[in-house]
View 1: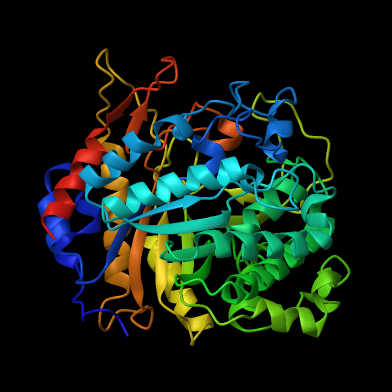
View 2: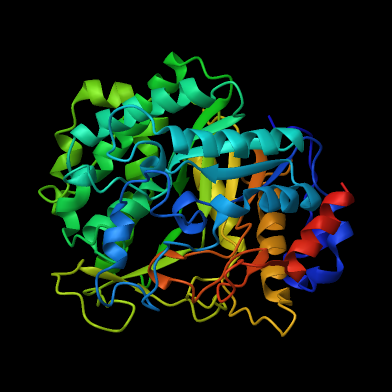
Length: 486
């Protein structure tokens, strides 16, 4: 059941835009008990890469490879959150959010991916959690947000990494379990498998295509073991994970396009959700039985471990996908081709919808499709929290570091309203208990292979300034206004 009955917000018209001047209207329409959070991840904002015994991440290594990061940058300093966490906690307090979703840096807490926790890492997160508690802000901690200690040879290709992750989860659960309100085991494992191991555009940069599928299984096994580890540590917080969900359609009605659309849906969505929520992998498509053999060979005992009872489920959404037959052409951020035999399908553009500056389709209506599919496929869903991408929109700061970003405001508002409408009483996804939203992101940071070229924060960070001066954008003020009108 939803926290409170809802009526569709169609009067707020998703397509009306100009949400910059309608913050009060949005805030007034938020359901009672609906949690509003903002999110960050450790590697993207923390900096202090060589401080306090932090170990190397796979992203440290990847960033050093020529042509892998669009602007040739790295995250060794980034927003310098380690030094500025008190100011960032004050920014959160003034914003008025209910919760802060951040990730724990595995390499900061366990530099080699095994062994005792690093006391300097423990001390930092102790200080951060105490600052959040002092300001009445709930904490949601992600154990791994696309980050992995470089010392774990083979990464997620190695089954042993799942066991190391379980040990790490139990150790941090014992350390922080009395103060963290919610735990996310993994953030978007599909992205790690696809971009990190299949296509090579993210760390660690492998180009294995279908041979990357063991990394999906090992991540899901790690999730299940981590849930067990956290519960063994008797943590008081709720436990879940965040999966990406992408509505998929075929580019045409041709059989080949339709078949590849079904395959893409399997690889992107059902491969990661079905084992967690149903206890089994989806049946592999007959033409790809050999490529998808990992699904057929999965140990039933592993699947029982993966299907742990969850307190919540996170849905991460960026946009829909339109699939057509024909090879994908892959290039590095600097335009160089990636030498890989590609997928036999590719993404077609949605010319009827605008895009963000990173090319993500800006189509709020498809979020309703994602929620409806979730409701149809998984009838026993726990409460769902929406993880909403902030969108990159070519932010330009003026001489006083001010950023006016009405496009981001519209993007966030329209997607949130679409989600609320889709889960309202009588709506197609009414069975989904939409319990909250986490907006990405609090701060501008290192945006993975885009480096610092695509800021997504509600708060501008001046990366040319050694102090990393923070300046709230118009989107921050808008959300602040909305939250005061709940």
